[in-house]
Image 1 (cartoon, protein in one colour):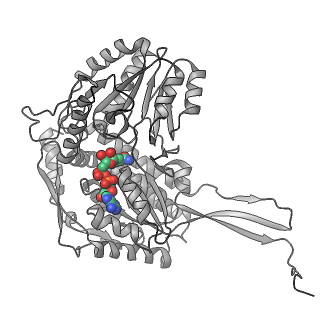
Image 2: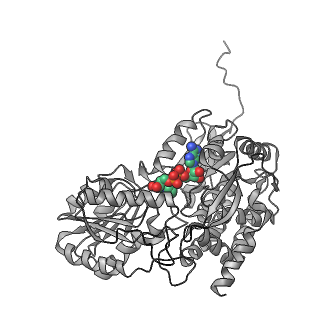
Length: 506
Ligand code: TXE
């Protein structure tokens, strides 16, 4: 398909009528709110679509639909096999529409088509994985010293409000919906106001499947108007949130009313540690991938690169050479290797951090500017940027920039690397590059992060737990851990001997 044909696919779809509706109780309905969101293509600055923006009343409608579907519907009582079949069907539909979904994602988020295609494939895989998990054995039984049998079963929590960010719009929708639905919960998804498009397309596919009414609902809108009512409602049993740490903390406070379950996947400032004995080419390749993939807008980005001093000069200079060759452009152009950042506002925030880096006397090795030449002048393109000799206490080494800006810090010893790595309020991920397996194990053992990669980076497995220590979050997504986060634990005690206690007999 040619470039022009590709864009016309999106054009046709964005004329679709569902953009200004919400999916509530199994149908596309007109919003109560009259507010409209303008959705922008970050590569061109142009408006892609106008999307309905929910108010509290719209959110209430979705909450009531999900509540009633959970309390009175057959979703949680139907067999896990039936639920699994629907999720399998959804996975197949995502695959059937993968090109279209990837193009919409690229147009809305800015990421390259290659990145978007990988996200779509991973989204389908997530639904398929949890469809499988729904039917697998679970629970426990306990031996006791009484004539009693104790068994533990896992049950759905209830109504789940799911608030997701803009950096992986479709994939985050899958990470949230798949385990929740597999476990028998009902859901209300609230995508980021910046990137609602693939979620709308996903719900059009959901609508083709026989999910019972009210099981899976979609509202779009801003955090305060559409997200907050989900957080504060006493009819919502769980909030699952991915986004910034500041918003995450606020959500945790506001969710306290009915003590709903809260899981948070927040920011990071992950250390990527390169020892002198590492496979050099591999470490170099991953150092760039860890920060410039998805334009650095990744919660687990390897944004603090710690390099052993013995190879520091050579490594940083080779990294700069490789970085200068990264082709930055419209993600819809197959030759682009890195797309724009999400919005004008976010670009300006990144530019402010670059200015702070310069003030803090870090050495700007490459990049550092907005790209404004022909073809990029209306988009939000930032050069891949590397600061070296960064003080570990500097603002740019401590705060999450969430853009293509790398801070490089030298170290001399393993102990020093560990100390710098752990000196952060965050604890999401870490990378360790070394050919010494014992050293890798020691580092992995003592680094305080939820995910640690050895001689690789940013490899994400649907089978394994994902989430952070410290201010990077609460709870885990993916794998069996992610499934458990959507269940309540119930103990059922039965007796082997039916007889009264006689406690009050005399
Ligand atoms: O995120 P927000 P923003 C980090 C990154 C970025 C910073 C801010 O550092 O620069 O966060 O980004 C919804 N009640 N990450 O402002 O606000 C909002 O509508 C309920 C890391 O874009 O956290 C959106 O759907 N919901 C991150 C979602 O929260 C609210 C990915 C995320 O938006 C709300 C994105 C409220 N009061 C940014 N306020 C990661 N962990 O990957 C906002 N929202």
